[in-house]
Structures are given as structure tokens and as C-alpha cells.
Image (cartoon, rainbow, N blue to C red; front, side, top):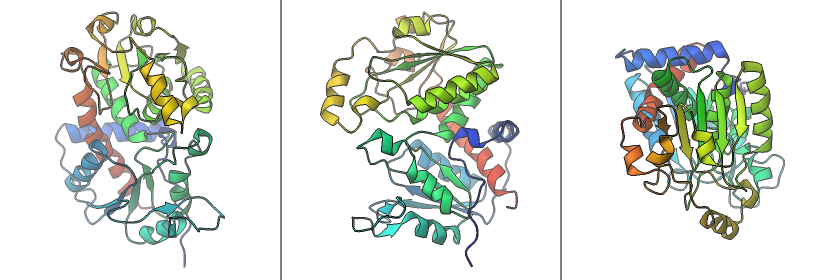
Length: 340
């Protein structure tokens, strides 16, 4: 008999109500302070990677080990084959199995599934639907955790919120500048979408700066405006990064790809090559209000951010990375120690 789909998934940070979000962060603080709890003794989590990972893979496995749980690591191509996520189609392509079948089977083996899905990379209108993670969530009978989809990276968002609070204390009313940086292989906008929503959700004043042609997803921006209005946060767009950073308490540097040239690598490369003056250096940081530097990594040194800033006293990049471990321990504890 097939169990009904599970509803306690984390596809985006908004799936955690305020009280649950605070519970995760409080647990994370306790773990970071030295709490040692084997909360997940006898529990297993399947980690499925359809794309490469360094921090997410390592921090997730260590988190499970420290909590007494077990990680089952699986990577597409080496451990399993491609999976189809589209519904109702004739599966005459390269994928020999559908996500709905894999989700049903794996749900009978493990207590949760953490997925880093792949994107097709041809059409943003298609990839923004996040079928690669939502199909897992639809058919899984255990909690599904998004380890970065096209639209969202809730695990990074949890670590970023913890880092912001560690550095600023009360974040409401504080100013966050999100500044685009250049990279020859820019990532998608999932991290920026998530930190934008997380900051507005907590009442921060956000200024977003990027070159022409690098607008974020319109639906995400519309939701961000609504969220900011409801929570007391504000969102402004400034073309010049100097204007965005002026007076900011935190500068969040991040490269993301152009959605208007999505799936067109030649055009995307030309667009990146035409951008100049977006390096985050000490001169830019000095415009802030004793501004701290955040970046989710990987970071291209002296192309995105200078060594001087990355290695300087106000850089929070290693704290962000460490907080991935603690917040993921808090999340796993919250999701898996409670029956059902």
C-alpha cells in the first residue's frame, strides 16, 4: 500500500513558518555552542546530487554524522542514472526512470531525502517551474529538502540569517546591499532570490545592484515587494553599486547569470565580457557603514572580490560556511525527531 505524499518539505525558506524558523536557528546556536545530541540515532537521509557540491555535501554529511544519523550519498552519472521529472510524457529519451517511482522507492528506505536537482539550462520559463525538486516533493512520503534548485537555496538562506544576526544583532531596519559580481561561469539566481526574501522577511532595508540584463526573476521580485510591505522591509534598485553600498551594514556579493540570455551561452559570455567595474574592493566597502562582506562561495578572488576584502577583518564568508553545518543540524533535528 502506497503512503500519501509527505507535506513537511523544505523547498523554499517560506515553507518554514516564523516559529519553526526560530526553532531551527535556536537549535543551531545550541549546537554551535557545543551541544552534543545523538538526536537522529537510527535515522537515514538520502542525499541525491544531480550537480556538483562542496559545502552542501560535506556539511550535510557531517551534520548527520554528528547527530547520530546516516547519510546515503548518491550522485547522478556515477551512482544512478538520469531521472525524468515531467508528468504525462512518453519516456523515450535518455532517462530510464521517473522521479515519481524513484521517490516512492527511496521513501521506503530513508527518513528524508535531500535533493540538488539539475536544470535543463535551455529556457528560464521552464526551469523556473522547479519541476526537478517539486516532483520529488509531490511523490515522496518522507520530508524533501531542497539543496539548491533553479529558484531557491533555503539551506544557504538559513546560514545567512544566522550570520546576519550574529554580526548585526537586531537585523530589522539594517541595510543590506546585494551586489552583482562577474564570473565566467556564473551560478543561477537561487541564492540571491533566497537571501533577498530572507532579508525582507526580517524587516531589512535591501538595495539591489546589478548591470543591465541581469534582472532577477520577475515573480520572485513581485513576491519580494509584497513580503517587504508586510514585514516592514524595503527594496530599492540602484544601477551603480556605489549607491547601493553607501551606508550599508552588509554587502552581499554574488555572481548570477543573465536570465534574458538564459540557454544562450554565446550571448551570455558576451554580456559578461561587457561588464566592467563590478569588483568588490576595499574602496567600495569603505562606502558602507562599517560594512561586513558576505558571499556564499565559491568565490573567484580578485574577479568578484579582492583578497584584501575577503581576508579582511569584516569578511563573514567563513562564518557563513560554518553556519551551514549548524543550521542544517538544527533543521534535521526539527524535521526528523518529531514523529510524522
